[in-house]
Amino acid sequence: RRPFPAATTPTMKILPFTEKVSLDALDPARTALLIVDMNVDFAHEGGGMFVPASAGILPQVKRLAAACRARGAPVLYAVHAHHKDGGDMGLTGRYREPIWERKALIDGTPGVRVHPELQPQPGDVVFKKQRHDAFYGTPLELTARSLGLESLIVVGTVSQVCCESTVRAAFFRDLIPILISDGVAPLPLPDVGYGAYSAEEVQRFTLTKLGAVYAKLATAERALAWLGGEA
Image (cartoon, rainbow, N blue to C red; front, top):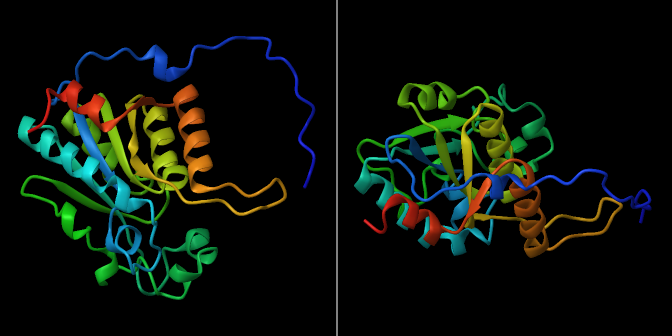
């Protein structure tokens, strides 16, 4: 393994972002739920890029979606889908063999349909994305501005990839990202010179770094309370 740089003592103390943002309630008129990549290829066993941990977040995502709909908060779906000709894949496709070989995340195939247990309802917004960041090249920013959103509840897959990229992008656009700690699903990371990490370890450090700098962290239960409880 490659050595890490020598540890040094930080010279400044910064209160984590998640502690700076104090919430007692969420205004449904200023808050939306963003469901990231809960399509069949990612979230259904047998999907072309199945994320095993996605099964464990389904109940929380369903509860949050129902509560948001009941209170008039928009429910948005970001679905990763590429053109069959590969013209929009770029590096995203080239380093992911299932995409490059047209075995996953191809527009028009069953794999890009939303998971059967999370089917969009009338009034929900579904849009396609081609990059990890759900804002990049999509209508998400315009939708957020048009709706007058202040906060974005983020759930889905994969914790350290598309969810993290989207949380950072929301922060950069001055939207408060609320990352649901039991509503995002991680994948393990292989050893690239510094050791391999299990999915559980990845989840811990993803939540830690995002909560420190970019996101308000909350369990689904806490977010439901902020929304006024179950539907």
